[in-house]
Amino acid sequence: MTGTAKRPILVTGLPRSGTSWVGKMLQAGGEVVYVNEPLNPSRPPGRSPGVLNASVTHAFQYICEDNEEPWLRAFRDTARLRYHPLAELRANRALPDLARLVKNFSAFTAGRARGRRALLDDPYAVLSAAWFARRLGAVAIVLVRDPVTWSGSWRKLGWTTYFHELLEQPLLARDLLGEHAGELRALVGSQDELAKNAALWRFTYDAVDSMRKNTESLHVVRYEDLAGDPETRFGELYATCGLTWDASARRAVREATQAENAPTRAMSWSLKGGLSRTAYQPMDSKAALVTYRDRLGEEEIARVRELTADVRARYYDA
Image 1 (spheres, one colour):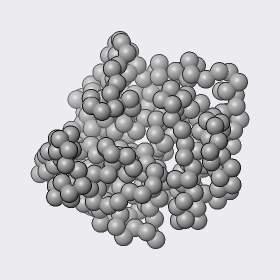
Image 2 (cartoon, rainbow, N blue to C red):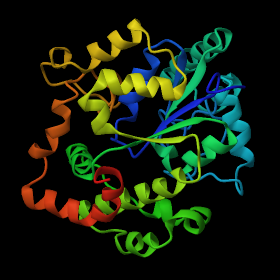
Image 3 (cartoon, rainbow, N blue to C red):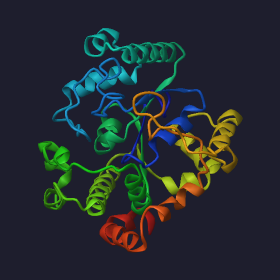
């Protein structure tokens, strides 16, 4: 294996940092098979042993050399686009599950036959990105989004943070939590969502900063750079991933990020069928950079910036 040819691609970062958007834009070139959130602890898209034949026990599952045995075997199969239909049938037999089985089995089988690479879009893999790069040979793309716009997106969706998912993982506490453990523990059960968001963002990207210093194939990409100049920045990202940036890929990115192609009416969301509230949709990528103004007040914006200032400076003030 030379360069990036045939290596799996991991696109990660905290949920709502743009992983689905970036994954779909990288898929547009036709050289990868898109694999949606195998480490998501919710079903769907997670808990699908056909896609990942291992048991996910926590959100933001931490994988390292000390607990890798079941993960290495399972993710090697996923990276090789080897689907496990019998394992899927044993776990999930409802009609929607059978439809997903057919879709995923077909995509994996066709992709393997055509020599395509696996692209894992998984924000729940962010704390394990270095392991993916080291042990699977993945090109790991970690997206970082400004904590203010990211917090605004979480508020819009009404999301909250459950820090016990992090604190209950001893190897994560040993390797990455460090000085953050006390802060996260103090916020368990808190109703102060902005403080919880800031703490999660600060811890995660402090950990990412540590990982990228020691992992050659881990690349941090700012959401704002991609959204501000999609054609140029995605061209660079294609090169980083070893994908072909041709006229077709360029056109797909342009059409998916221009204002005239953004939805002109509210979407009809459904969590039981159809689109999820977080599914990728064509958008005006530049306009998406300022949506936080409608979601957070000035004092809240200032507070998020203050709470995350030390880590944010490493990504946005350098």
